Image 1 (cartoon, one colour):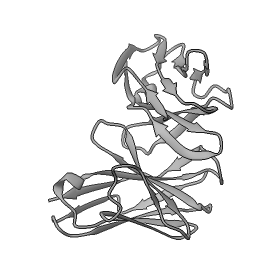
Image 2 (tube, one colour; image 1 turned 30 degrees about the vertical axis):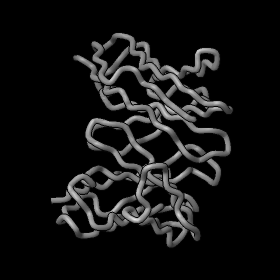
Image 3 (tube, one colour; image 1 turned 180 degrees about the vertical axis):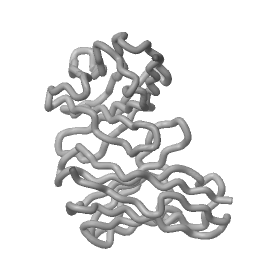
Length: 109
Length: 116
């Protein structure tokens, strides 16, 4: 069964401080991991996916298959980063996504 | 980028009535669409997979007779909540894959349903 765990429901970080949002997954096949973000009063949108290995808005995430983790990191938080972040898991060839419970990130000015 | 729209964005209905929510892919075709339900301050729960030209696939625990899904065309899927009850009040979100077989999805803005 697919499962995604985001242990922190709420996370508050001071502006300029590093951010790490944790995500662990459980999947028997070859996983595809995503981070989606939902800003206030906006729709869910893709932030990044592990395949692309890119940095979006200063965020990065590395897939660690040994630890089954896909933590989201940013070295210096900005106020506009305040949002709800969801880690999501899919499988190659399988269009269904399984979402974690989400972490609400608040950046303190 | 690709856009998915939903209509209405907000609806209030009386208990016992039915309400239809539309999900459209505006500039791309989607043979598959997904319907999610989101409770306040909770995650998205996949309800069903809508398949163009065939029956929807429902997740375990979702009543198919209560949540009717019709994927009438390559750009439109509808979710009808039948005989709505207050406990059906929720935020309903649809999504469509970026491409056939793609896991990456585009999400609609959601529809807030309130049943009185």
